[in-house]
Length: 222
Image (cartoon, rainbow, N blue to C red):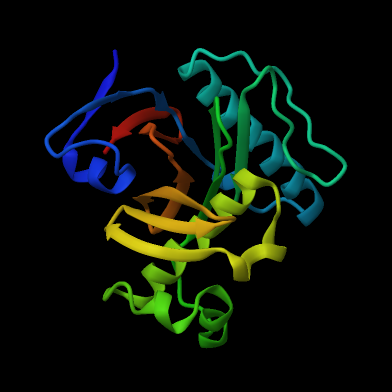
């Protein structure tokens, strides 16, 4: 069933629509999977292999929820995910959680644990103007910016070498912001869970988040 998005977000998504109009949008389904406790103490090599496979499990769930068959997708020689029959995909993995998402347009997802970090990293992630766009907890904002930029760079396939060219243009609210990159505006949505943040570039899609903790799944919609 199509999802109706209200004018509050539409005002930021497009300038072509008049106030009070509505638009029916397709949905994408990012999936976050918890890493079992007994897998967090594997050797570094085995842990990396496990997290990569587990992220593919999240990707498969996202594909099924999207009614898309993606099989075992490959990456190119630069490590960039290759589309399958016009469908794009992205994964992310960290020690406690992994994530995957499938969409019919360029997509990127990133997750991080929100934690204290060195002040020197702030200058690498964003400039003075960008930090002045929001007045909130600085570490929360740091990881909003970091995961949002990483998601967009993943979607394009350029990687962190273009981090300095990827600029926060606007902070819409606690869960949405806009990035300027390659002469294009990218809309990014955040999802907060268990002291972590996940970010995905959304375009004009509605985002339906799902989190799997242990053996149970809970779908979360903003």
